Image (cartoon, rainbow, N blue to C red; front, top):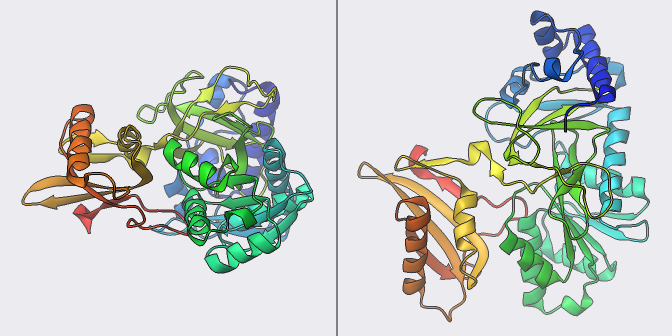
Length: 411
């Protein structure tokens, strides 16, 4: 799905704004002698933007609109190096709310719903994005923010919340608490809108079954507005994204070459109308593909497949490149396991060791199961890990994102 004429004009408008503002990217475009693009080929030769560039622009080097038009800033939740600060104009905030309201509508959520929002508020884009979309839609927002599970469940019961917005980790934690407390008959949830971390099929099925709800994947990142730039439609795994606000390409992460629709690669996003901090060809490091076929739901908005992982998720162990998604796929073949797992990599006596922790109930022979899983990893990936089987509930749960890969080699 190549960039169309209208989108090219929108890109040229953003290039003009960047150059005239002399912002961080404006300077880069000026140095490269770029003032406009007149074809798909020229657009695909534009330089990529990267997260490290955004850090270099700290604190307000990305600001492209005049300061008196900036109404808000957000910052990425990254834990390394300088944070990335993204300025927003009033139009950016409104556009984001419009996209988010579309996401709710795509999920069949209406203004008669009561939406409990558990992601964090503040510099992070999550909570406030879920809330702005809810208000734009006209539904009732219950802006809880993260944590305080007792209070969350109390409000959920008393207010008869119908929609849960959360990370998949927190949705699982709430599902387990509801089961443990025997209050499922007092919960009125119908749908869950889940974002901010990749989650596997097994976890999805577990949350859906335990809470008895329909689940929707919401996509987004702080650099590109925040969550709400895409969501899956009912019964579909692909996520529709709003191509009147963003243009998406899929590239080969090694060569940077644009891949045909249907091929797996890295998502690259261009903002078409963003004023505060427009981004052109921003490398997200998220891995997916554009689904070329029309969607059975009838929506004309294009679709991304589920996020398969990140290019920077790759672990090199004993000379072999491994992605957490590969381990997750192997664990899916063992129905007696819960959705939770943890990978720990260490370097002992001059060699790398991979340990995989998994959960199951007490009816299984732990040692025999560990041996089977280790053998399956060996046959599919090429080396034998140490597998530790523990009882359900032993591995950590999180109110935010669950850290599944811990690399102790560099501690």
